Length: 75
Image (cartoon, rainbow, N blue to C red; front, side, top):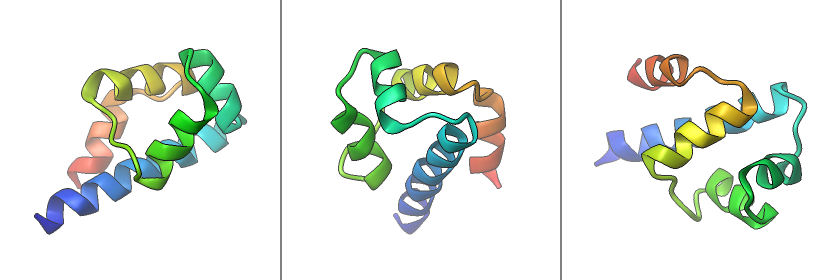
C-alpha cells in the first residue's frame, strides 16, 4: 500500500511542478477545466484524488504529455 501512496504523492507533485513550469496559477488551471480553484488546490494537496480522465484533462491544459507522466510514475 505504501507504493500507491508514494505514487499518488509523486503524481500530485509532478502535476503541480508542470503547472508552475507552464506559468499557470491554480486559478488559471481551474478556469481552463471549468472547475473552481479549490478543485486544483484539493488535488494538489492530496485532499482529493483525480480519476484517469481528470489527469488526462489536466495534462492537456498544462501541456504535459501523459506518456511522460506515466514514465515518471513508473520509475
